[in-house]
Image (cartoon, rainbow, N blue to C red; front, top):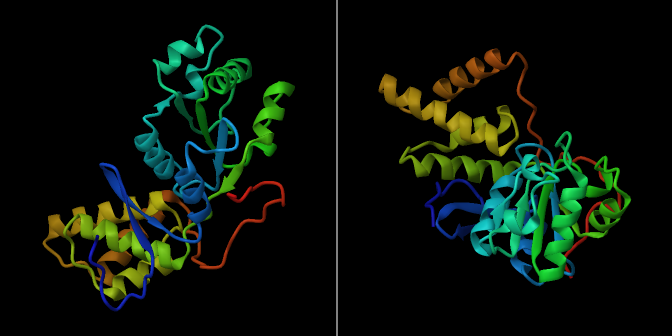
Length: 254
């Protein structure tokens, strides 16, 4: 368990990830965690996790991969020449990420993979920004199967999760950071897991190279530099901001 500054009221669960970095359970990802915890007792062969870029889908997928011994198959590997048995190498669980965003994915190959897993009692975890109901699938049989699969959304990190993530990332690097720095970053940085990791890495490298403590001034300078390089301001922080989704886009675990 990571020791957190006593001043920060962050009542979140820190979960071990079987040899991978720990992950934090919060309202934004709790439904997805509950579904992954149910594996392999899913109601069907497939489950889809969806949400905006940087929300932590890949992190959760890697945790599931460690638990299930799943093989990862990229959309580029799904070709007419790739037999499902060759892709699986005797595995009974498969991870395919970014299906909805992949261009030119062989839908017939994905359909055969789905059917093969269903036949052997295997499981398939899919990730994407949108739920399968909004993926531009052309093959009717594939579309019907994936749209019938449970789809669970991971939301952007809220204030508590973002602060807890920053605390953990700094602690992983043995950096002592004050509450004022954590709160300032959570308000001003881009609201995503990827942004938090990049920002903490940059702060760590700069503090080490310049022999400086981690202060708000140091953090502000690095964030300003990253913003200038990106050419646009970071997304404003808001603990209550959530994208709207349709009522059929998510299924809660029973």
